[in-house]
Amino acid sequence: MFTSKSICITNRHLVRGDYIEQLKRVAAGGCDAIILREKDLSETEYERLAEAVLSALEPYGTPCILHTYVDVALRLHVAGIHLPSAVLPDLPEEKKRFRRIGASVHSKEEARAASQAGATYLIAGHVFATDCKRGVPPRGLDFLREVCESVSIPVYAIGGITPDNADSCIAAGAAGVCSMSGYMQTKKG
Image (cartoon, rainbow, N blue to C red):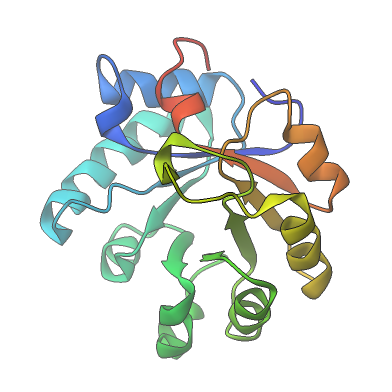
């Protein structure tokens, strides 16, 4: 789907068909990582889903990063967690157990704070107009460039990313791109 490094952000509500089969297609298509977002689930529901997703992705070797639920990630021995940037400073001991710690950021100041709090990568957005943020103006490539220049860890662009505009994100300094609907709604990987 993308020629640059890409991360799939999940949203089972966007999938037409079987969710697990869609994630298998994404993994088979060469996505570099999958962030299991699904923020509307309780911790118990999320853990059940995470177990099923981790099992389904295992044959593909695609890293799965869990979202928000640190205890679930620890119980399932997952090496990556993605958190709201404001939560990072409150997890000093838990952070030592993860190889990948991501945070979503919306300004260069937030990016610097997340990096200093232990994030190993950032997702910055939204860069372009997107249905996920309908009516909210995109921050644009200058915003992305500022965020990338403000930290020394990889930054991934999100928000309205398509194969046609992904390269402009890389040119602005992003290590790669993230997509939700592009991965959740396609029949190809």
